Amino acid sequence: MGGAVDALVYYARVPSDAAAGSAAFQHLLDEDERRRSKRFHFERDRLIFSAAHALLRAALVARLGDWQGGFRVDDFSKPELEPPVGMPVLRFNLTHTRGLVGCALVDGCDIGIDAEQMDASRPLLELAEHYFAEAEITQLRAADGASRAISFYRFWTLKEAIIKAIGEGLSLPLKRFAFTLEPLSLTIEGGDAREWHVEECRALPEHAMAIALRRPPGAPVGVSWREARFVRDAADRVRVALDR
Image 1 (cartoon, rainbow, N blue to C red):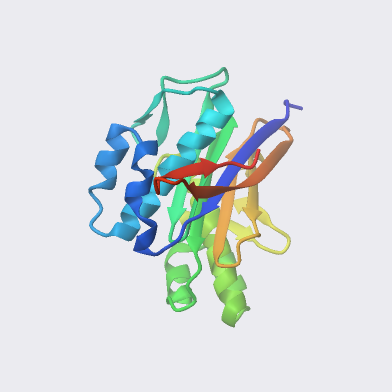
Image 2 (cartoon, rainbow, N blue to C red; image 1 turned 120 degrees about the vertical axis):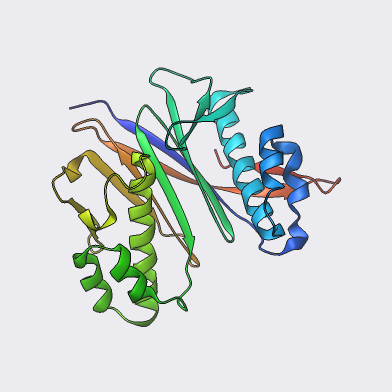
């Protein structure tokens, strides 16, 4: 059996109103991140991007100490630390959606995280029939109302977390792997689902959030979910308060 794998997830709620101000986060970002944030047309998108990257930087400093590094992307646009840190190398993944940001960190394993704000007004069954495996669609058809919406977004974040962990686009087509929600389990057509640890954060009534981690054979996995807060100072700038 391999050694234990410990993953750390930070998440933070973000006010959705423009009064929260993406400008208050800019001092926490590097020059490239500030430039990228300005490309967004809408302030709400600048805000959530800035908040996500501020959270990630705070998480890296908490994990590594006085971290002054940067980021690079691989051939599939998956972000990595530059320069790499640790042996095995520390890996991370980032997610942001309306009202929520999150990041996941782990040593030496592929990891993905996804969060979505739940919206029951969308054509959920139509979307599921396009993207989901038949076993997942069957589960959704058996649900209704709020239950269907919650199940849809649980499926969506779980599947997206797998894809982000693999980091090679849709090299594993979405219909080739399926989740069962109660109890949570995974099957992969032509693959071994036992190499994956998947876990959800169920403490967010308006959002679904999940991580997927590809572990060494037989390795037990522990995941720590920690809520962070964005706190304003007297100068109306934001700092990130982490629950350690």
